[in-house]
Length: 452
Image 1 (cartoon, rainbow, N blue to C red):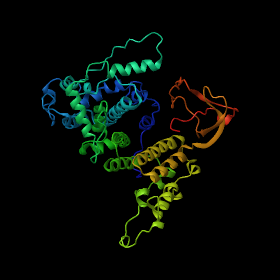
Image 2: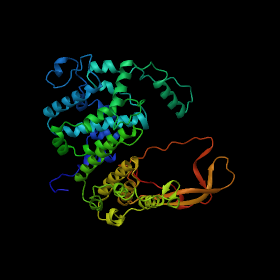
Image 3: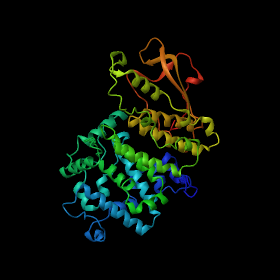
Image 4: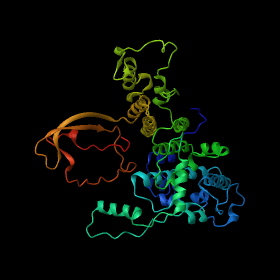
């Protein structure tokens, strides 16, 4: 890393780690994003400027080099040049510092897509309503209702959740044909290397808008964006990883882009024991691939050389490479003692996300190497053990239960690491927690860091 390259700001670090932003106003975009107030971020002045939310007449887009949203021929593919033109115009008016807010809006769109498709609950904001008014009217969702559903007295939280989900999908009006066509076109744009994206993805417009603000940056604006918001590369990698999650099989082009963005992020991270370990740009899995030679075709394969339809040499090589990580490519936990807690947490998150990327793309050696380094950076200690106890309500005898004992290196800071409330399972068969035969401090519930 060059000494002239600035490090990630404290605000960028806090937002990336999902921690409260110290010293920030509660109304700032960074604070709102960390708090989960996505609707307020999407209704902010920056979001309205880059998406053209308030555009309601043709005069507002006459000076932009982009398709007019007032024409009936405006399609999903035209959203990209329109947003790119609006971004350039906003940066020209507000100055290069606006890239920090633009990146936060893009991160908010990504969070909104993840919340809609995985974590819930659904946002009450239709992503089409962020676009210029004629597009919002044409593509608006027709089955969303803001009125609370009528529930029987004494309904539990599970029934409430089921009713809300049914109310959004089944009890409302059918989706308009224009909106359904838009969603199909956007899902088509999410394809990569011939791999199709999941066709029933809800609200793909959120992910597409996130891509436009985080990945598809106009080339003439990249230098300004990197100077004002270098964390944009990290958010771009996260966006591309979510896009990969929509595909049936890994796409090499997405992997190359993700690794390239995360490699750019490394320039803005503080020095650490992992810096030297990650200098090699070659994939460890690629280095272990067997390269065919000219004499392979001349060497016959006999029955004693094959086990389970695989050559013995290749099986032994695979077993050896998957289970062993070279010591030169790992950084022991003792080497991290001189690194500050904040820097260790940032590096642990970075290495862990790299490991997830390689794991999702079926590269086990690279995944293990980075996860081992992430564990060393975080200082997490864990051990698999066993203890006798009961797992079900009607169990009359104790059996050995598999137990994972874990302990974080740093104490849990409730202010910066707000842990979500644990909800009761209320299962008819399983207990809320395993009832161990003998109580032990090691078996007691341990407060872990969120990342651990």
